[in-house]
Length: 161
Image (cartoon, rainbow, N blue to C red; front, side, top):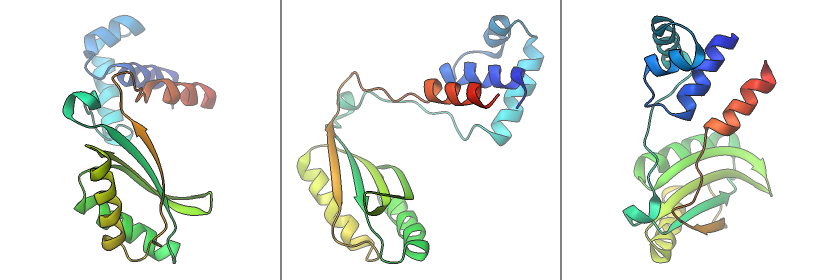
């Protein structure tokens, strides 16, 4: 990725609402160049733009990181996780992987502890390929939580170049 494209991407990651004109001013390049680069990034690099809520303000008290083990990881994990994501709007992120004796991760939001318990019970019902033992890390939400893609992504982009 060329330096100019990286610079535009970093600016978009910092604030996706920033106009192409403002990005052009900051990077000292033309606005049409920024627009052309943004369009290319939106085709190949940027999946979507989204708002990040302050969870307590919308009634979300808990964030759960749930680790499970599928009996047949190559077959079961992908199918199971896709089914769960479609069926459950509380899921923020799903992935297969390896670590701590587990091979799948589900990150979800919950109104309260009871809602979390119902969520875990539903996962066990929805996906029979996942063993019943789930280990979870529960974190209470606060106004100060950081969900930042710009900082870590910017560091990786700079390391790569």
